[in-house]
Picture 1 (cartoon, rainbow, N blue to C red):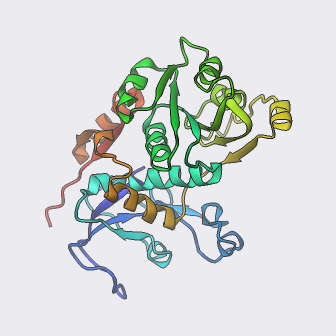
Picture 2 (picture 1 turned 180 degrees about the horizontal axis):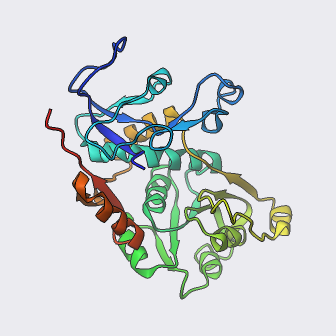
Picture 3 (picture 1 turned 180 degrees about the vertical axis):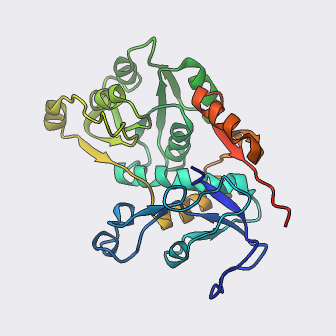
Length: 293
């Protein structure tokens, strides 16, 4: 927890020359070692010794957080541009994951894109697809209230999967062809199973949302992949460069995020923040600790 981090430097460790007290910074969550077989091939997202803020190291739900030297070694600290606030900069981490996913799925200008899941990640997928030039973006969820909350990202179509056949709806909205890209931004077996049927021939399907580790098996129609020549890709995490690019996208206004920050709570209300997320009553909940110095 607390792996989406931005804040102000209050102390600098020995041998650190690039940063000063008072600097506003955003910190990566996924920490590659930079030297393993996969890192040497340029695939830092699947580093063989990957570590994470909030898992292997204490996260940002605190007044003070130490940034490990391993983060600095892979250029994992980014300066926050003056025009945005730290809360916006913290969204660079999930946006970095979304950026990695859309790179792997090949979201291009003119594409029709389906995003399944209207949570914060789904909202970022809609915004990024638009920034990458997608001509049509459709957003699907089975929770009508969550879909309404996500209407602020202005997808071209909102599809309530609880009352509408989402496959039929996508095909209808794409003149029967299906979508160029389908992204499952939800930890949902039905979403992954239906995604194949939503994609047009030669389309791309991104299994972005992971399933529970104790129940990860889905049923899929492999003939859809075979006869339509579909490209099915996974997407996990981000590399340090994705964080830098995500921060630039936010700072430039190409991917606005300020309206996705629906709640701001102090550190002593972390439990309330988790309840808001669990109930789907907000999009992104920001914890804003204060440090007395």
